[in-house]
Image: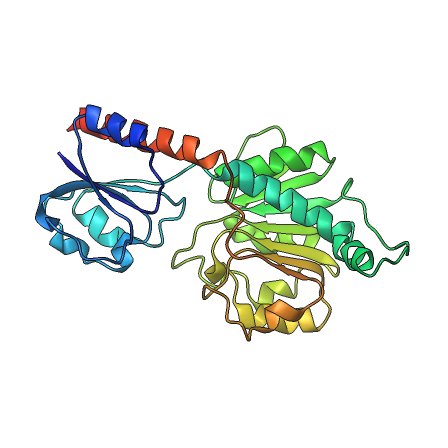
Length: 302
């Protein structure tokens, strides 16, 4: 059974050997854009953006796709469903680093870390009396999946009141209130911190726009670690200019890399990072465990 592995994940020799011992013949390509040999012989693939560059219809014997991303927005879902291909994502792999990153950035805004870093560079001993507490704040997590739940766990330790907006009701003890998706705007009006962790699809494209940004509290914090297309950037920029937010924290953007001329780079209260919140030394172990388990389970069923 031929399995195509791409450079979207860095395998050790031992890990490839484990896959081969499961009965797979492993083929490897570093760059997902490069030409593929033996398209019609490949039955399974582990990849990320592979099908942005290759026509899935050419892979006549393809039966299983394992993604190294949590999002499903980079694969042709309609074709996959129509042809009953097995599709797995990286659920749970990146949740811990993304949750830790989110807490860090919230605290950087509330404790104004940028101010102190700048003063240190200037060798200036100047106190800042305008700092905020995280304790007692209200946060809403829009998209209470694996990532959202890990964030909620950590926020609860800081005595934050946590709401969740999701299609499905969550019953975790560390989430204080649940809102169905159609009541998202109600949750936005009550929250000091808004965290976006939901998938990008036709329904969520530009879900955050000028209409509901205006509903958010003054001096709130908006965080996006899901996909850039969730927010209509031109609407967000317009509200940032009106001093709507205490802070805006963006790890993802409508177009990546972020254009060097984008206004988002230069706002003092906006933190820009290059789609980096998921990075951690623990990812390799978790990702390979997911890859191996899913490929093993799929092989048993077929």
